[in-house]
Image (cartoon, rainbow, N blue to C red; front, top):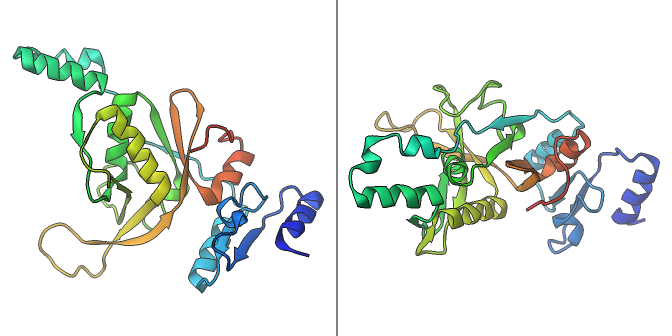
Length: 247
């Protein structure tokens, strides 16, 4: 009996069964679309013990940890035009209007590079008015305290993603789509502080710790949810997301 037939049989016996697909065929559809086939995770062969342990730990049936909310809110019309600088000159006033409408032209990194996740989502939120919710599973417990919020003074890690590669300039609102596309395509990278520090000068150095492939879900007006693919089914089963409008 093959893997797909096995998972169908298992799900007929227990709809909540936790199963992970392993395959040496990189083009196998079930590896890239494992949720559609009823699997909780996917692991291409060959894999290391660490990779196997990570997948098993992520899919051990634990309840979802919930959300972190980016703490940045949209800059309102009242705030923008309450500042004297907004009326300091006709050019400045026009610039404020363009910023408010999200049509200011901004350069896009080329080649693509790693950028700070929270700061870039804050900028997206500023122009779209949407609030970003990030699944707590994106923040490893060994690096981030449970009550983490952006700006925590004792961070051992940070989150980033790869963005850009198209060159030129784009309107601010168009940059939102590019950033979200980069997040989905390349995943969210967890960076951790290098210990012991190789140098005492300047900012501390970091190294990539792990990468979570993610989905962006818009199932509630004004809310954007970022969830690791390995936890999609768990968040759905818990009623925290609805599997529609998934990017």
